[in-house]
Image (cartoon, rainbow, N blue to C red):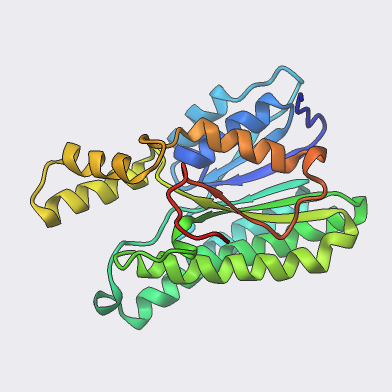
Length: 262
């Protein structure tokens, strides 16, 4: 099976590093014209140079801060006033770690805007073109904590669950238009976000970073952390015609760590 997405355009959130970057790289290899999106312009420029252009794509990027919803909303509105996309990857940085007792109302509001409102608003702007052409792919980068919440990630648990639920409802509404909506339940991947969480774990438990890292690896039945490029492979499939009968799904990509059946 060879995945070719020639002529398709994608907007990929959080794509200057980690999982978002890996998704952008793989989509470009499949022929997609990619618009990167994150808050760090230097890293966006570096990533832009890494994107495959074998099919004549003219890739670009947007500088935006997902943590500033009003400003981000203006950036996205302006983008869609002049552009359309066929593939939308809803992916942002995660909110600060912490348990229920450490968070205040303002923290929940900010996390709501970061993980839910950003995705909903961007998707709303992307949908008209997708409907008109009878094709669209909306892929939400989520987390395994939607199904198995972790006490120290209360903001992420709560808001990502809301987005997955919304995505399921959206998938039913747009399926007749040739648009699929799926969410990926992310496990432990080699990313800066996981490194930060392991550093916090090491400090709170009085262990070394390598011990914290080994604990994460041991928790995964495959006994290793995921590589971001593996994420790109799954997203490329979901974006293709091969996945046209797959929608409304919450797909685990976690090395088997989830204990739930569904």
